[in-house]
Image (cartoon, rainbow, N blue to C red; front, side, top):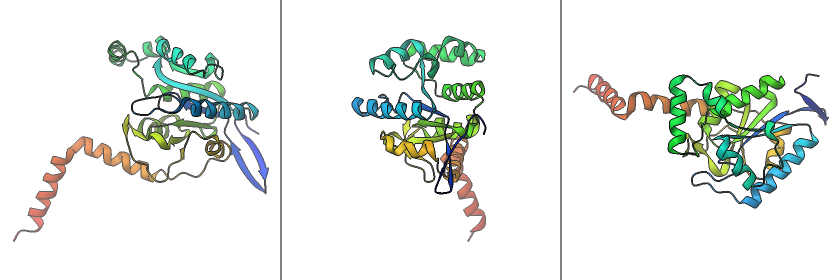
Length: 241
């Protein structure tokens, strides 16, 4: 049996238990934008999740795209530090910023100077990949609980390759409210909903997300005016009276 897999034989069926779980801080457990979860609900959810992960030897990580200087006090304020030691609390630090290309480094520092609570959305993927490599975890042995179908869902498909689930109460697309995409996994701040995602992650149909991303990128590249011009040209060419 490999290091990242744990199997249970129940009614002649085999279930794959996750070995790592990453939970986003902002937008899931903590307020972000218009989203503001009940602190009591978030604490109970995290307590139940942490208890289960400890029992089943699942590594539990809290992830924040904010700099340590502002992220750590927020974790303490909400009482979450009792669930995560420093090695399981992943957030931006000076080493991460210094590792960027010069232009990206300057852009990040400028963003922080304008807004100390600036969150680097791509940091999650870097942090997750580092943990997978460090612990020799298979990507399919890990789960990300987050809120953004693009920077968490699509990026996970492209980069870390881990499974992900999106919070139903705060579905975003690059920080803006978005609609549910069929075929993906979703969750709520109710551990009974998350438990099956850790013990037997469902088969996922990514075709809806692929189509959504393709259409969004196409729109960004050509825009409505160009699409309308092409359509009008086609109509004139083929339907001349």
